[in-house]
Length: 211
Image (cartoon, rainbow, N blue to C red; front, side, top):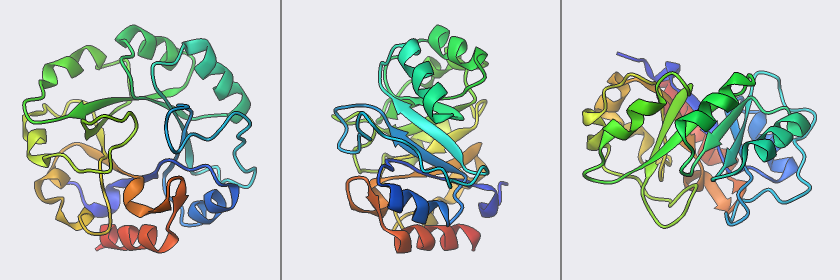
């Protein structure tokens, strides 16, 4: 069984430099930055990652159906560690991006009846899956899905759990902790407003994960 302290934390939807610095001081394992213009947490065209970000924190660029040259250009300018792909990206595109040295996280939006067979083509060409709630928005719908669906997943590729995670529900993971769960992906559930994170809520989640 995976112990709670072994589960990584990713804070996604970051964009305010001061807020990024404050969240980084808590030492989550990942910070996510959204490069999808239709997202309410879009970083904008002239975004830069603060230079004082600890090297231990992995930088994740979030993209939706973006062309690889655009993704690679962002990687060159911002020194990303991972790309998180929220659209209909093919296994071939994932493989090509991974071949450049980038880590790759492929997102699948889940609802009752989801067929996990669609994930099999991505084995070996991504580092992680991310399971999120199916909804009208790419990159987050602020709601948790039925976690029981994950019992149908073969656990071959480690995964991030996303979708409405907050201090109110992260201590109810139950059997999910026995699965191949790599990280919790927090966004709207620890926000003051879109893109602005609540430090105390993040601290609460981290404390719950340690106990």
